[in-house]
Length: 407
Image 1 (cartoon, rainbow, N blue to C red):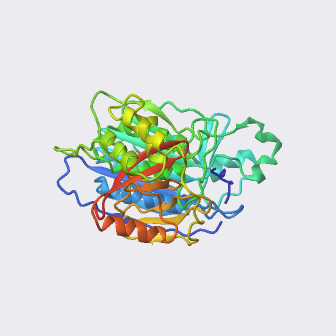
Image 2 (cartoon, rainbow, N blue to C red):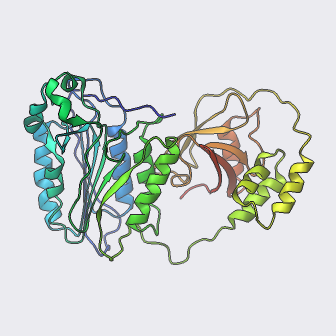
Image 3 (spheres, rainbow, N blue to C red):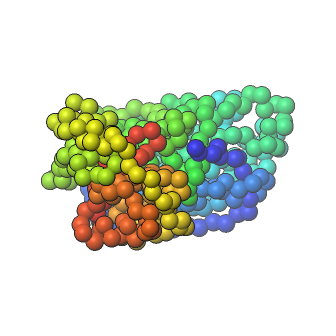
């Protein structure tokens, strides 16, 4: 279960990074501004924005953005200076993108982003101490082809502002917006709702967006629909991202699809987990995904053979979180049943784009996780023999992924 972001505000610490992608021959010019505010001065800090911004910046670099400006924990002056500089960069670019994570609220139909030094003791202070979303959007107007603004914001009024009796004009979450043509505005939670931090180092929205951006062959409209589905699954349908705006018929891909994509027989792989597994989980997952599949009769027969049930076994080996370097994962064993929990997924790791924090690996090459070996040992050992077929429980659903060491 995810936890709601507590709106927060703390000391100012700025970091400016100019990152250059390795795709110098790209046909279009892409620039991005990433602003993340977490250490607010007048409320408790937000946990994830800085981690989220760094994750998104790495993914944008991998997707071919030539210039990425990453700014952390900015006061009002710092945000304004960054915005002015970025407007000049956007004016000469084909694609301009802004990502903001931090505190954001709506008042009287206007959306505001909150710098880390804001006090906001009265609602009218927003005009002086905060940055209007409409101002942020104007920065991208010069881009020739596409303009994208992404808001992964807290959207709960700070306690000081909630005490102001005039704040009755404020609503929960951000207000709807209608951007101009060839422009998208993406909210991490749709208008009138709040976003979640999640239980890991990154928010569910940032995790999903970073994973999808680097996957080839995702046209931008499909990509953000897939991000929506990922976040809904990760938050038990509590948080629904939403995209506002309209695009022309010209397609846009962060990363274009490979000319010769690898085709995996997912049904065959799922049947292999059922056929070779010692328990019922693989066959149950196969029949759930392919109730009328070509191996369905065999899977039901296999379940009948396993109907007597598995013998009782000893508790799992108790371990702390461990790193699987070959995959870029941090994992740990479940305490009450066989399974390996994915705690973190590195954007540079081989499993990035395959697994999400919170996933539970219930089969490794058709076998349940062993009780006398640590999760890292089991995954690393399986990888030594080649690609690993992993059965993964993701919320209420079960899926299968193919894991390979390295990139």
